[in-house]
Image (cartoon, rainbow, N blue to C red; front, side, top):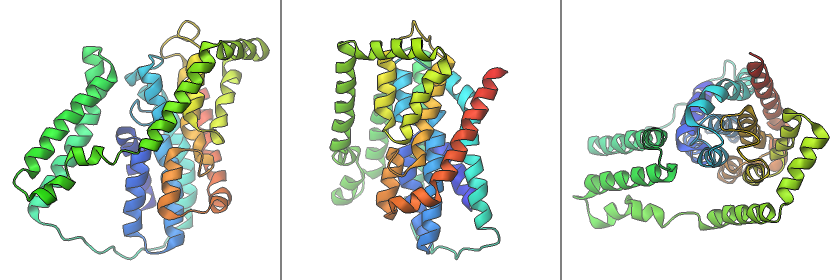
Length: 322
């Protein structure tokens, strides 16, 4: 069961993004597992798998999306180069935690009764949503237009589908499931948080501080991969400002599109935050849903996350050798 949850989380986060997937899968486990301790262990594995799954997809994490939009990576190449290291990040923790549950059986969860029409509508929305997300990188590749245009087109098509599905329902019921209603629930503080980070980084770039830091690192360390080690700060610091700062420090003339430098940045910042519960947006969301204690996660999950992280980095460096 744990391996199935990990597998679904890993691949779903590459489509829905790691934050959304972590929320969905943690909510699902809360319906399947009755014991609090079991839910905590599953939640910890979900954080690791969601962050690992988000690292190898241009849609899976805010940071990889930033690199994709910035032209530092392309969709097909980041998938090809990071899927094996990302698998390595979550496979070791998953096997260790699975061993803990060897031979244990869980009680069956009660089934939710729904009508045939509700099931059909749910399947339409699910498959249409996933299909439109897959469509975004295809749209960019075929049209060479910015990714946000594909995302807005997908949103518009989803809006039309939901209106058609619910047009014959009572207005009070239909209103709850419209895109307009969903947009009213957008987390404005989080959007302002990211806006503030990007403005602060842009200010540092404008006055030349980021370029000076890049020059200092290059002269002092004289090695691409040693320079990239500063991205391991994502264990402690949010990965969005780290990636934004990196984009300001190094332009495409220093490291061209699809250079291993950018791939390593995507991998290390995307997965390093799993080491502590507040190190990633997915971790913070799961912490709120299951009321995970910071010290419990630090004692039980952090070492497993770091083992997976180190394994993923090792696989990436080994892959580069060949």
